[in-house]
Image (tube, rainbow, N blue to C red; front, side, top):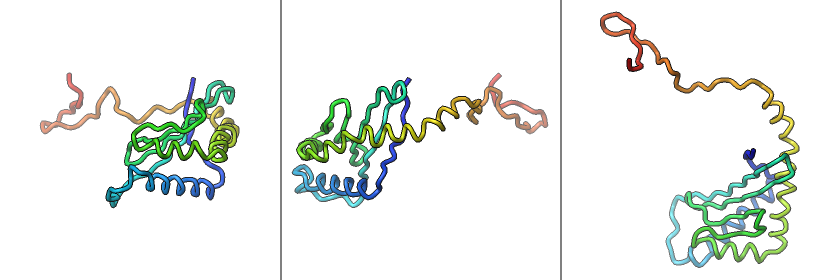
Length: 158
């Protein structure tokens, strides 16, 4: 069974520095040149750690998203940055050429994923043993309302 955990990056300064560098690289790419930059845009980096059998099998996938479209991805099973859309190849080529940065990204499998798993696993395993509360979603028997004649009727069809 696999499950996802939100990525927590230790050292906020380095995370901000990497994100700023990637934004500058993306905006200086040939694809971005010659166009007017939009006034509003969304740039996201999402990191997901996938686990199987504890930390025996761990996979890190980092997705780079510009305006709700993934354009670049790092997959620890592949070990390098892969372009997803035509906006991705310049950044993938640049980042794969930075050997020290690429090695640090590969090491995040241990420094981030396994590290966070060891911190969070005791709380997760404790919650698994607890009884789950039912959701507050819709019920089979709908609420009763008073009809104009004074009789109570269910909202459910008969």
